[in-house]
Image (tube, rainbow, N blue to C red; front, side):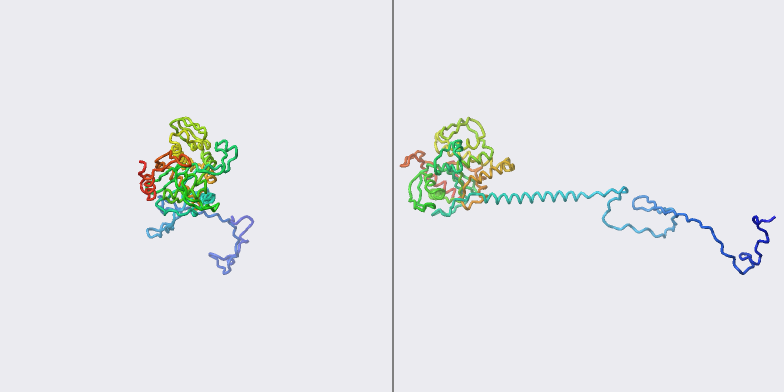
Length: 419
């Protein structure tokens, strides 16, 4: 039986001498055989080594050849700042909080810069709006400067800018020209601030003066104090006050009827308290006892009333001092300074109403109002409130006391007169 496949016989086999290979006696090799193509199988990827505790390699790895104790260890990770943890889901890493603090700091700095620039711009704008119309350099024979700063504060009966209806509402009348209705001397120094009212009917010496407008030489004369203002305005009034007191006036501020009422209304009124009812048909004052808020017209009526007071003009000046102190308190209060809807109208009304000297700055004006708040208030010492003169009844100063008072103010000493 043949072991060859079907259809083949021993005769079909090559002869032994034609064979080549193991046990072949032929020197000729066999022909090349065609091998079937076998597709290459994908090789498995090596798995990452398993790790135990953080930073510790267990040394176990599938397919790893153990090399013993002398095997080389893996290189340590590179040193540097810590990297944010890897998010397998692709989420963006969180920004550090330092960037938020930086943004807040930059925003706060920007606000400070804006406020600073706005404040500086407002200051220079307001300073440029001051009505600097009084030339103190034209005042003759001025006394030597003393210690501290002296302001002359004047309230005039000017109707400038008032219509006929407003004059009727404020009960100012329609008198032409201007006269002084209030004269106050404010001394600001290291030993306290003192506000001294000079009655407008004070009997004083008006010194020689050359009129800045008329050019006429006014001779020296005895007159009431308010006559100096009627003759030649603010410059002669300053000259007269300096001549009779020996104090050098550093700054001058004046306000008229209409401006005074506008400032009060812009401020929202001024709260005043009365121990008894106040009535004066000439000024229009009509107030019940107790505390109440006065508008501009009512405030003007209160400051002008003089006929109810037993002391006449002296009692009136005390009312004016009390009112101006209260007005300054409210103008400098946080409810005004921190409220732009009240501060801006008050500032605009004040700048429109005030007439000041050529050397006064907005800072000087602020210092004046601030000093009025806590100033000690007093009248010029008087010897005779009904002194009879050719010009009618006048107020005669107490010579010894007022000279002592002026010396204390000139030297910026503690005021003891009147205590």
